[in-house]
Length: 127
Picture 1 (tube, rainbow, N blue to C red):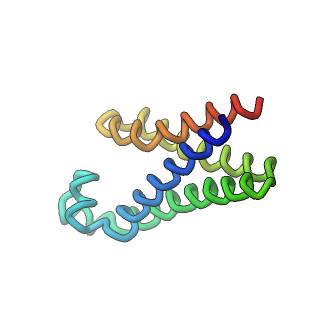
Picture 2: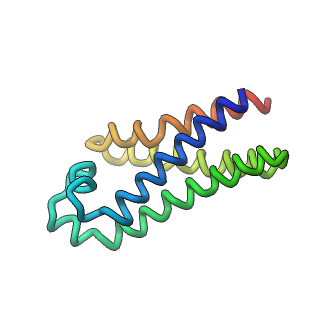
Picture 3: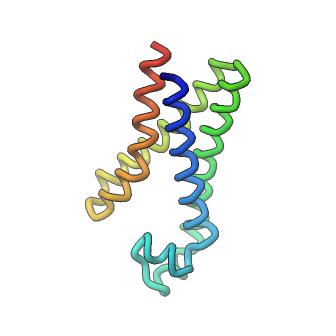
C-alpha cells in the first residue's frame, strides 16, 4: 500500500509542477489565462503574484519528490516525513481554496484530491 501511496503522491507532485509552469512561466499566455479565467490585463497586473505562487507549488512538489527518493533509498522516517509535509501542505492549500472561493471549487478538488488520497494511504500503510 505504501507504494501505491507514493505513486499517487508523485502524481500530485507532477500536477503541482504543472501548476508551477502555468503560474510562473506561462501566466500571461493563452493557456494559463484559459485555465485560470483571467483576461490579458488581469494576467499582466497579477504576474508577479502568480510567479511567486508558482514557486510555492514547485517547492511542495520538490518536498514530495525528495521524500519519495528517500523512501526508495531506505530512509523511511525522513522520506515519509517529507511526503507527509509536502502532500499535507498541498491538501491543506486546496482546502483553503475550497472554503474561501466557491467559484474555484473544481480547481481545489483537482489540486487536492491526489495529495489527500496519498496521505490517507500512506497513513494506513505506516500504521
